[in-house]
Image (cartoon, rainbow, N blue to C red):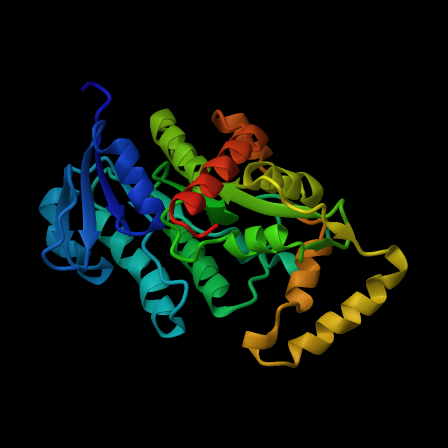
Length: 321
């Protein structure tokens, strides 16, 4: 195939990686770096090891056109520095002598959205990461930028927001769907914005960025901002037969905020509501995706609607709804 490329995916057995493999295994020659022994993936060549030992595969790296770096740790704080930061450093060092290009999957979390003064967050917004994970992803970007200063036109980094879809081990949106079905969801501000993106949108963006082959050391937000009222209506449409959510009267909002702060003091397992959820239900901050839309074909609203439909159908097939 004339457009076929040799692509290495780190984190290929993870959530986004599995969707990329499904899309690409008949189009490109794929390699996946995996610590798991005796693993096989149809249509994929497995490279054993992790990013700390990536240099052991230099013969293959010399032939690779693109590396999609999705490897990372989001749950184990003890591993975040080694995987998210030093892992990228090892990867970049290993490919420096070759013309290989890198598409690095970062996170919109690096902006520290709660601390931002303005509602609109663009790629130029100063990053204010809050937690260990966000700080590790931000540090990785600093390493990537420094490497890019020495290697022109070699990388793209994308910053997805909250990614949901089939194969997500956290089953994002499942709790919300169940709350809608049971009538336990309520609006505080219908004009609040939510920042979700479906895994198919992320994979489509990666695919299009590879096809353009314009690796100009660039960063892109990948998001599908939408009012919470519209988002909830889409969920209800595909769930079918759910109660109409009630809206908290404006004069009660201060009391709801106080209640949220009270729940913050309780054990996590008892926090069915807290200040984090209050922010989610009232925030008007969003990640702007105009830069990405100018660069590739990316219809964030239409594609998000399709992603929601597929996600709910997948929950139903699994018997989760």
